Image (cartoon, rainbow, N blue to C red; front, side, top):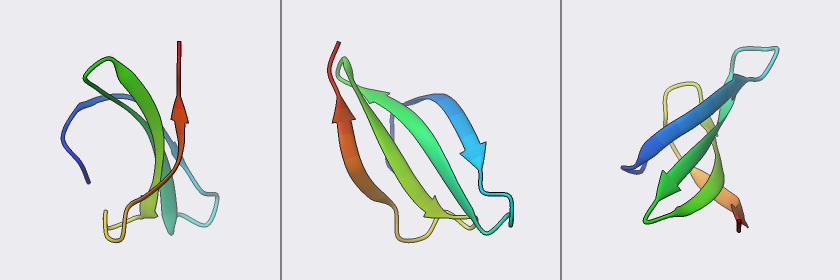
Length: 48
């Protein structure tokens, strides 16, 4: 998973995936990953 400040985390009910809100350089983004932290993907970037 990328470096930054992790603001929140949510687990999939199956326990096989997770989503995190990450803040880096004042920009927040949502990342999805396996429960092992492999293959992280960032489908959205949030602006304030």
